[in-house]
Image (cartoon, rainbow, N blue to C red; front, side):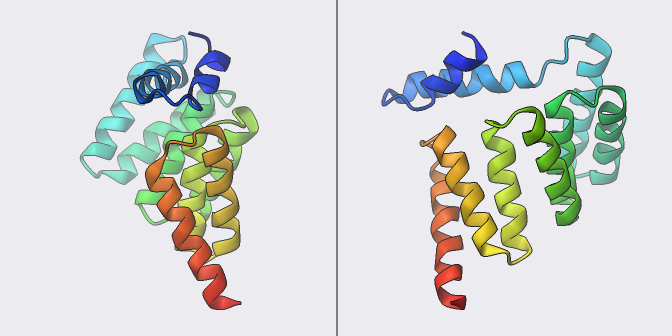
Length: 156
């Protein structure tokens, strides 16, 4: 399955096909093509799982510096920065991810979460909508969109 085929399959009604497409996309996005870089990505993910955000950010920063064109290096650092509470840094990394992979639903949803934390509800809603346009079966993103829109209404 190519990336374009997988992106198209995300809109399918067959949930099993959607799950296969999503897994295929993550597998594609998480491969740099260089074993040592893929190992560094895995180390960063392990640091995230241990909640050692500084170590994760350090590893993902090394990846960004080594392969600035690799969208997933930016996305993983965005995730680590978000979890560390650096929402502005995470937004910048999501934007870098999306400059390289405009259909990266993870970065779209992640940037939306950052804007929620920053109480920028209109921006969050716009990003959640974009994520759902790519991957309409993301139930948590749909709920986050509802929450963001409720806050927009509340403050207007």
